[in-house]
Length: 463
Image 1: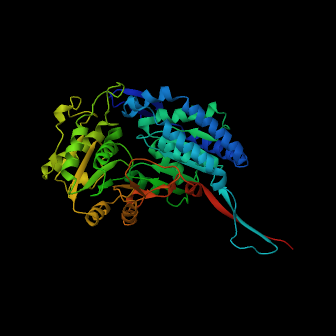
Image 2: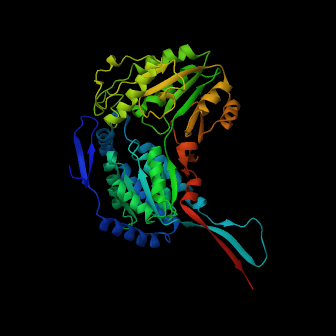
Image 3: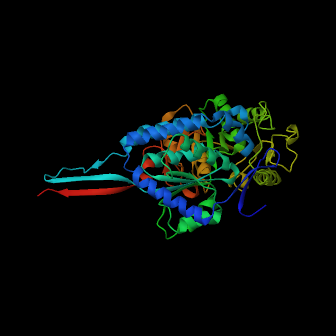
């Protein structure tokens, strides 16, 4: 394999699915130049016309759904029975298109002064680099691509090597929509090339979704370039089932929130704290549901749990589970009931662990796989302490019948989003953000437009 190629290995069978050569340095510089030139004209296009173009891109992308669904399965293992990501893609994109004009309108000064015109305008930052992850290759990328274009920016997309075909789908849809040449460009880049782009200040803003280590590498690469950054990094999202929870609803939703997409969700549930009143029933119900999963080839309709995106990801979760059991945890799922898990592939049986504590990596470090630890708690105070005992803070979910209690608990949680009676969902009207090692910045909502524009003040005096 040439070191100038990006190779996509399918987790289904470990075979090469596709390879692409990385771009030459000359091609990168030409792409940046073309994007800059296209952005100069695009920023002056009225928002209504931008909306029409971006909507045409979205329509072209949605039309590819039948091809995209099996392609996602082949690239990263999600079962075809769940369809693609395009319902969420459409919801987010249409919302961000719809609020663009209001979000980008001029901000008048708070007080009037005779003889002066004073306002703040929102100027596009210029050129935006989107570095997208493999776990939700369309949903994650759309969060920044659409508002960036609507705000008058040009966009360069570097997709994860595990899902590089998704980047090419974005490009095809842009081309079919007649987007101005150079305004959006999908790029096949190595890590070193990405670092050079950031370090040289070739872009004005970078949005990265990925690991904490990846985020630190992005910050190091951009140091001194004054490139602004949006970083959505790791997570160890907790859930709390209160004494007044609807327990059947909690079991069903939390099992899905922990194991959908083989647990490879940015805001997937990775640890659950259950009030002692419901603990035994919750554990029994969760184990029963998990045992009903069918682990297998994601291209087969009967499969409900596909392989993880790569064997090394599955190996990490295996290690976490083994460490927990060695320290006294109880494993409720017998891997022998999942024949596809032979112990040395990307196929991994789901697991439910009890008798866990925060000395175990499965309760502290990101798993990003089909395993969850469950702990018994006496009440809100203990649950809040344990939920906050993490270096991460993306989302937290509370199961309760008391909406005021959920809000009050949420105010004490160190997290970016507080859910009640649901989890693993992004509302495009709300900011998607995190605290601590989960990152910085915000996507979605009107706040997304603030990171993709810069304020420009006008102080105009009449004489």
